[in-house]
Structure formats: structure tokens, C-alpha cells
Image: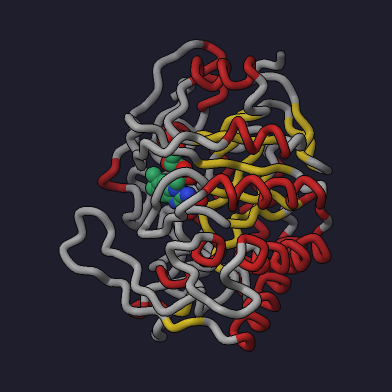
Length: 356
Ligand SMILES: Cc1cc2nc3c(=O)[nH]c(=O)nc-3n(C[C@H](O)[C@H](O)[C@H](O)COP(=O)(O)O)c2cc1C
């Protein structure tokens, strides 16, 4: 069985180890959603990861309701991403942007417009928040869907122009694609709602666009199949996510990443069993697992064959040299929650490496 330090090939992307940097929104882009020079340094520092999946990156202004998150719809954004990608490549790394549409979670105070979703629903407040910044979404029209598909195409094209190694589709965590897939948020009675096949239609159509732009062997996807997240849930996740994964396998995509919760996790928690064993049975291309992994647990899941690689979120956030630290059995810096989304270098580019 491979170790975390063995190489792996994600479609057309050859990685020297099986550590993946999980997507992490950090809010260090401009208010206009343009990447900043600080982001060059942040990603460069983490380029010893086998693969970096960037923070959620908006495909359109209307879909990116998160303050100071970067986008990939304008020439200015493409130009600002180029030095980020170049810095990672020069340092020997690989990087793909996580393409993000927030659907009903797109904040009106950021986009200026009411959000849209599969159906007219309102996302709940973030845990611990005093007020709910989410307003009621309107149900997408077929024109909205057509425009959104075009936005995915443009963002994927722009990813290629910026020099990225591929793209990763954010279909997890209760955002737009998830809102369509699950019966707790999709109440449509047209071709995009009702049966599982219909609820997976948007995913299939987005994938068609991404594959057309960058090739299946450079497209990855992220799901969060088990349990509720940001008010998004399904009465039978297995019935949705196993066929979804089988479809992605039939396309021959580069990788599938699953963020799965356990009952005692520190990010999100659920008693709903993990679906990774059932997804593994239908998805034979590289399967990346995430959430609350430490090196021993990560190696155990490689050993059992349920995962081919492991993505680390908070450990990479706080340890730019995570790979080296694990190789040496060194201790890890603890992440500082206070600076997860704050502007500036503090808690962003100033976590110490072993070298100092
Ligand atoms: C600060 C922060 C930002 C995050 N941003 C994203 C994001 O943009 N996209 C996404 O899919 N998940 C996001 N996540 C979830 C992480 O990718 C990951 O699933 C989570 O941290 C659990 O993995 P870990 O235990 O290795 O940290 C974020 C998590 C944190 C802590």
C-alpha cells in the first residue's frame, strides 16, 4: 500500500506525494474579488503539498457573495492569479482553483442582489452568528441556469489562461450544486428536480462544460455527502451521491474529494455514516478524503484502500511545511481561528516553518 509520501497521478496531474491542501477561504482578496500579492506568498509557502486546491473562487459576481473572496470571471482577476500560479509552479507545486457558486448562500450585502437557488428557500444563519445575513433565494429560471453554465465555462477557460493545472468543482458544503442535488433544498418540479437523475442534472451539465474546457483528466470535484451542512441535507444521501460518483467515474475525472463528518469531529459533526466505502466501490479514479485527519489516520485510510490521498485543511493553514513536519514527526502549529478570515498577513503568511 502507498504511503502519504508516495507519488500519485490525478488524471493529467502528477503529484510527488499524497498530501492535498484542502480548499480554504481566507478573505485576503480585494473587495472587488481580485487576488492580492499577499496570496502569492501564502500559496508559494504551501507548494510542497502534492496538490493545492485553492480557496473557493467565484465563477461570477452574482454567485460570489463572500467578502474579499477571489473570483475568476474578469481579465483583471486572471492577470492577478497568474503570479500566484507561477509562484507555486516555480516552487515545484501544482494548483487548481476551486470553482464556487454560493447559490442561496451568496450574501446580498456582498453581491447587491438577492441570491438564487434550486428553489425559494433561505439558508440558516452561520452557527454562533447573531443575525442571519442570508435572505430568501428565488428559484432559478432556465435562463438563470443557462447563464450560470456559461459562467462555469468562462471560469474554466480563465483558469487555463491563468496557468492553473486544472479545476476543482465545489459541489459540497451546501452551495449551489449541493442545493440542487439534495431533496432538503430542491423542490423543483421541472427537469432539475424530483428524481435523483433530475437533481443530478445541473452537476452533469456543469461537468460537461468543465470537461469541454479543460479535459476530464484535469477536473476534480468535491462532495460533502453525509449529514447536513449549512441547512442542506438529503433524506437518503446514498441514493444521491453513489450514482453521482459513478457518473464522475464514467467521465474519467482526475479526482473526487469527499469532505466527510464524523460524530466527534471538530469542523462539522454528524451521526450519519460516512459514504466513502460505498463511493470507493464505484469511483476507482483517485479518491481524496478529508476532515479531521492526522497523519496516522490518513495512513490508515491509505492502507485500507478507502482513500488514495488525504486533504488537510486547518493543518495546511497553520503549517506551510506540513509535508516536511509529518515526514520528520515534528509537532504542528495550531491554527488561530481569530485570523481565519481577517485581512493582512497575520495568521496568514506568518506561521513558522521548521526552518524558521
Ligand atoms: C478557514 C476555513 C475556510 C474554508 N473554506 C473552504 C472553501 O473555500 N471551500 C471548501 O470546500 N471548504 C472550505 N473549508 C473546509 C475545509 O476545506 C475542510 O473541509 C475542513 O477544514 C475540514 O478539514 P480539516 O479537518 O483538515 O481542517 C474551510 C475551512 C476552514 C477552516
